[in-house]
View 1: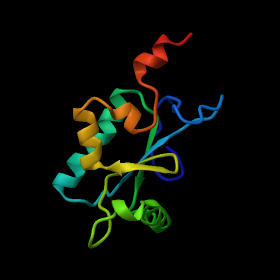
View 2: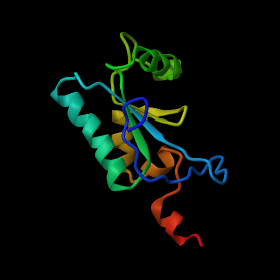
View 3: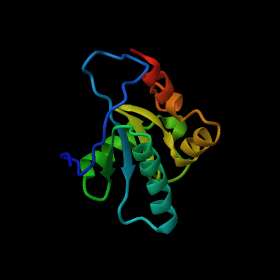
View 4: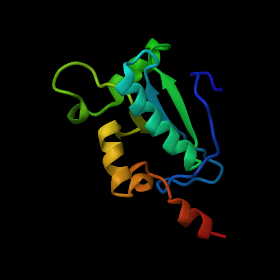
Length: 129
């Protein structure tokens, strides 16, 4: 586990700024005290990342006020709800905002999750020498 209470799994380098030795982590902001539907959405994201061996960390917003405030201020204004705060899960590639669960699900359904997350697809990664 890391300092934010997240679990790490093997890395896939991003398409953007693929610097040798640089590790990119998909950060999934969750809330462990959420209701059933929110927990199911959070698990869906995390399980997909684990199944595809994408390095990720879960950041539990209920355990870190600093992380919660960082997430709120980092989400672009046009992606925030009209009222209230953005609800977990929220997905970031390092410090770059990717989207919420609904956008993640749409990219999963259209088979574009890797580009959506700013990652090389597994097939492209395996084909490289």
